[in-house]
Image (tube, rainbow, N blue to C red; front, side, top):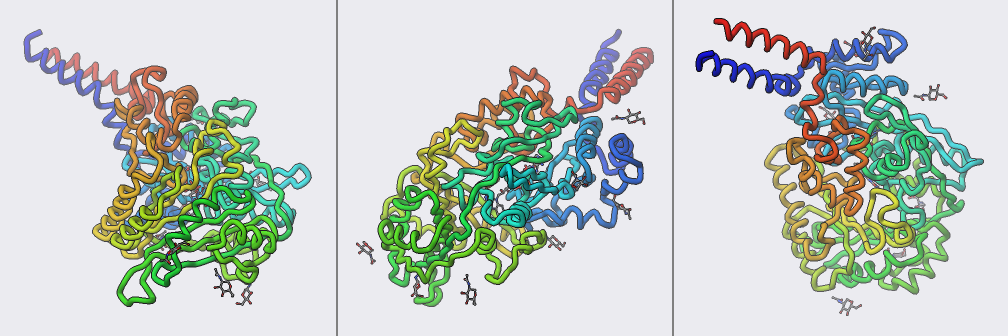
Length: 572
Ligand SMILES: Cc1cc2nc3c(=O)[nH]c(=O)nc-3n(C[C@H](O)[C@H](O)[C@H](O)COP(=O)(O)OP(=O)(O)OC[C@H]3O[C@@H](n4cnc5c(N)ncnc54)[C@H](O)[C@@H]3O)c2cc1C
Ligand SMILES: *[C@@H]1O[C@H](CO)[C@@H](O)[C@H](O)[C@H]1NC(C)=O
Ligand SMILES: *[C@@H]1O[C@H](CO)[C@@H](O)[C@H](O)[C@H]1NC(C)=O
Ligand SMILES: *[C@@H]1O[C@H](CO)[C@@H](O)[C@H](O)[C@H]1NC(C)=O
Ligand SMILES: *[C@@H]1O[C@H](CO)[C@@H](O)[C@H](O)[C@H]1NC(C)=O
Ligand SMILES: *[C@@H]1O[C@H](CO)[C@@H](O)[C@H](O)[C@H]1NC(C)=O
Ligand SMILES: *[C@@H]1O[C@H](CO)[C@@H](O)[C@H](O)[C@H]1NC(C)=O
Ligand SMILES: *[C@@H]1O[C@H](CO)[C@@H](O)[C@H](O)[C@H]1NC(C)=O
């Protein structure tokens, strides 16, 4: 061989090694639709059925199917990347098929249940992808005798609450306050609501689950084993498989519960600083039937025109009667000034509607409405507070909030049941020692990149300002308050290190166990997203992610072609 042949062979070899991953990165709607449909038809009753559950980009319903479960207008623009296909399974075998077929074709699968992910990662990606949309799988079976319910992943929290109420007036379930949130994302990410001090997180009340694993097998608690069952109770379902359903324990609620709302404003001489300071002493330590959420917002002053001030709102649920909570607050929190006339007694299901900001005459069937969300642009972030913030520090925070202009806080008190569950009982680690969780919250209605950058940057500035007052090493975050600012994964050589950055913030010491489980159940990292649990580089072997996904028979064909070319090249 002369030096030219050596050079040519070198180039061919280079191409040989690189073409598979180049091909894997560029499937098109055309190249995916037919093979996917053909493959999926093996898992449906008829080819007629398969064409009814797969929406291609050219389908006239594509946009509406895609948009039905978008809850953040930031990811609803013409420049937002679109899936090549949306698959909407009607039955469990369709989910098995979707996993197997996406894996065979070598394309990323994004799983969506309620679509409430704050960063839209259930329906947006910078890689070509298919959405597996679970909204049809929404059956709920309530068994009051055994005090359990089986709820499919595509059901909403509102539907779950409604079906429980329909069957029993003295049972409920501890989960989020927004009724359109999906069970699949909410429970697999932990899930909390206004009964967390009494009953813990949603996942503390999960007793079984059904998932489709990376091989397309349906597993329950018994067949998936303790580790995987532990992982999908707060570790994020999307790293491990597709959640089909959870079995949950119902909790006992009294026939009458109490809600109240108290509002104080800084510039009306209502001593907001003292109020918030005392809230920190009371809310995380009081009777565990009482959940007092505190909202802090910069608002326009009613006293001085054109000036901003801080408004503090307490929204509370007491799982009991009004007299009792008025007496309790009189003793523990006199600054609140709570009187009986400030309280409303109602059924638990009406309290769900009250927390959902429905008009006070709304009937429970409003919880079945899936189209109630307004479509704002929004950004959320989270933090945990472990020691009370001092009064002068609070005053500094008010000043910063007023200067920034729009970003507010929601303080969610912990304590109660949260202190009784060990931090490794589930992947969710933020238990004893945490006084409250902060949600940073900013919504806006105007489209545009500049507007967006302005609001993102003010949320980030406030987050940075809060550094001295919140948890550190690691600075903790709540998975369900998805925030891509804290790190993302690019699935390259440093996937584990990248995953470690956000992983320890979401899961603290539970991160390593999640990595071990991930590596065991999905070593090729098929189930991945911007913030999924990475595989362990040593245990999993050197090759990771996308490259491995290319269908092996396709890779063989390519190799044979390249070798033939190489031989021809050597002879001319
Ligand atoms: C208005 C609003 C109110 C909220 N209130 C609360 C609250 O009170 N308490 C609280 O804890 N959180 C709350 N959240 C956050 C919410 O719990 C999370 O966004 C949750 O992940 C949403 O679940 P989803 O199924 O609707 O979301 P999706 O966007 O569908 O999914 C979220 C994540 O879960 C994955 N996933 C979804 N379904 C499955 C499945 N079947 N199998 C495997 N992975 C799956 C997705 O791939 C994605 O990574 C709220 C969010 C919004 C927008
Ligand atoms: C689907 O069925 C066809 C034959 O009908 C078969 O050739 C193909 O391998 C099957 N694919 C899968 C993923 O089962
Ligand atoms: C769009 O997709 C749906 C579901 O796959 C199918 O029933 C319908 O016939 C398609 N419509 C068009 C115009 O392609
Ligand atoms: C998305 O955009 C469509 C119009 O293009 C609109 O009808 C829908 O309400 C929007 N949804 C969200 C969540 O912004
Ligand atoms: C939902 O329940 C109905 C009625 O029991 C049943 O016919 C259907 O197959 C169930 N769907 C799924 C996806 O389990
Ligand atoms: C706020 O209340 C505290 C104690 O209740 C008091 O010492 C302080 O002077 C009050 N501040 C204002 C501005 O009223
Ligand atoms: C409680 O109700 C009374 C009487 O309606 C009202 O004057 C007072 O402002 C309310 N207090 C709070 C804290 O909302
Ligand atoms: C509901 O609204 C009506 C009229 O505004 C009011 O009289 C009633 O007290 C309210 N009920 C509750 C529970 O707030």
